[in-house]
Image (cartoon, rainbow, N blue to C red; front, side, top):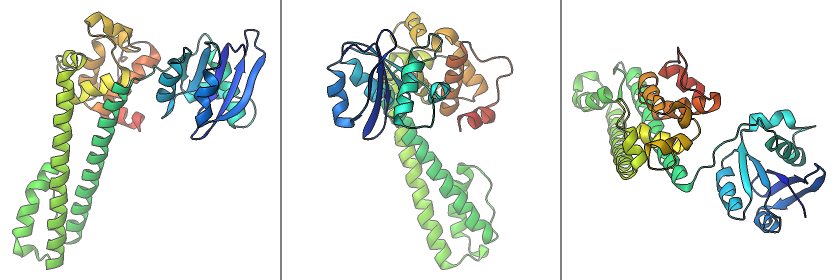
Length: 299
């Protein structure tokens, strides 16, 4: 089976395939199950395989590359213009096959397992931060209903809770004090768990030579350094090898500097900054948005 270009519409169980030969004639147009995919691809001669970048795309890209194929990932928004008809698996696979062959197409770098581990570490930590923030807001809301106001910031709430629980003049009921005590304990649990994650990120940063180079930039710490490496990679250990990573080769040291200056050393904003630089082909432009605006873009 002479397939030159193959488009794969990824899914949970059933994948759509559309392949063409060197003359652009349809050679493959079918569906396969998750268990059948690699078995089908191993029978093909090495070809160009296109897929949309999604949650499982990097895993499949690594597995398919082991079979000798060349894999390229694309943002789904760049595939939409090539789709003919309604959105379904066959049409999506055909659109992917067409889009991956375009010489002007922009591709997403394939992440290795190390990068995905770093991103998983940051995502779990971010979820803990969200849970802690939600808990703190709930505590403030409950106290505000009883006429007790606590200023914003976790540190102020953490310091005020013991005083509020001991103060008998605020007329809090016994049940309310019991609830606040339990919530304060959960707040300490979140603090301890976040401290453990920060220590784990610091250890990862210390063990990775790329991260150690990044933290030398003013305003960049382990959190941002590991987020940048997890997002765009920075392949290689020498300073010049960093230029091989998409976005970094064009931005070089300006990317972490922009992260510190414009994004206030926020890990999530650092990823947005590097993604923006990667897609536009140059460093952060004049008048780059503030940290709040950048987070709004990422959301």
